[in-house]
Length: 111
Length: 115
Image 1: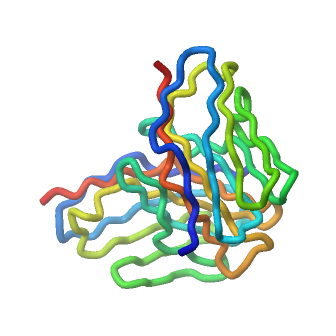
Image 2: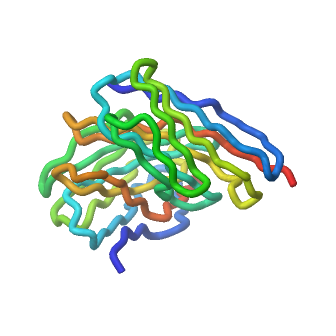
């Protein structure tokens, strides 16, 4: 099955850029997602990228996909204290209509 | 507004009891999922269902059971066989067949505590 890995923790200063990384194993993955979870809540979709794209930008968010290395990253520009949350990478595989999640990266933004 | 609703938000279970967590969606999604989240850990798939009256075990199905009698509903029962049930449980749904972006919609979660 698919394995999705993320680093556990990231700390940045307010106003800096944050880069959250994710690696996955299944090269046939079609859609790749970034979700945000605030304390005690469910997950909310931030953005996604289709596997035939290298980059997608959406306001302060930039997603980069390196298919060769099976590496996905999420860059948050001008990080704010409200961006403090857990960020999950999720990978979708057509064959099983399954979403596999990484372990989540806890982003802490210091004022 | 369409969405996915979990209830209750908090649930307390005594040792040896079965409890059922509710998940309802009005998004007309075919696929529904149950995930377990432990502190500092990611999401682990318990069960999923891609169509009514059919469901499949996920990675950690032991001690859990589900049913899918209606498209809108996918309740999860945590049985007494689940030795460590204290966790945050998340229900999700996705459209099936795949669309342009098969976004998963999540409920707000149920926090289950064994007392």
